[in-house]
Image 1: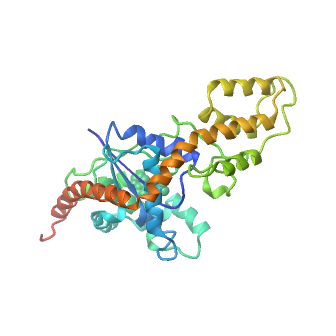
Image 2: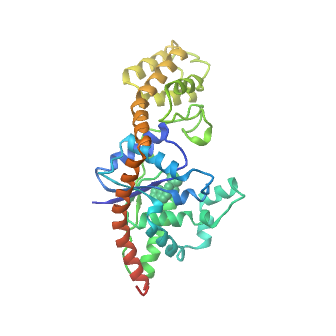
Image 3: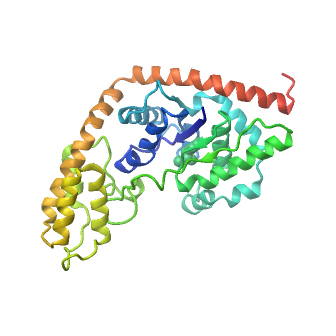
Length: 331
Ligand code: TRP
């Protein structure tokens, strides 16, 4: 069975866009592959140093949210990155094979330099090396990532090839992107532009844990146009976005009803938004209840993470032993 690895940084709560993106993809993959999913808390330190930020709480919260969405710790290995120091060791060793020039050329690094110019630390520069270590420590064949991470994956393949070549071995497979961007429903934001995301302000995204009244408020405030101008006029971008969300959460009858109403110029945006809000609420409510249950039970979360740690260690240990012996350490 092929091995899959993916990580998420604990820097925010899950929203509908995450649900229909990465999360549903993980859930589909867990039964078909040998999956390692982890919370990338080391990576978080590249932008959010510890102490002032409640790292542990954020880790437990994101685990609670993933479990609530249906990630099953009996089907996949769910663990925390910092529970696997083998990853850190492999990162150190891969750093010797990573060139300063290629790291500086990386798009995500250049973006960070532009946005975060007060703390350009070495961790940020070597972010792709740590990510490569996450992937190679389990000898992954597939990595489900969005388009924005494909360059990191390309670098991972280069480090793997370089290691294999340098030590004249073939211990690392070249991991391929499992790109779900094309096949999955994209959920746009509520502000009329782009995709749903936490960086676009608090009213752009609907979080899975949010209470009904807040969801309703956000949907009622969502950007629309000034109404269809004529019969069968094409959907404005704002309405196209809202219809796309409706398509994901509502029945096809509801969706068709409002699409027709738009085409006939009979649509009333108040009714449309009420229906959309209600269907989002119906969709999120059971997940929200499960999030509450899981986040109230820290002992359970800790037990799950310990189990994951043991399973992940087994796989990581094997790889790091091989690597150490290839390099020629004395023990
Ligand atoms: N860089 C990824 C992101 O921001 C998170 C990540 C860290 C990751 N290590 C990984 C993803 C390994 C896949 C595999 O989304």
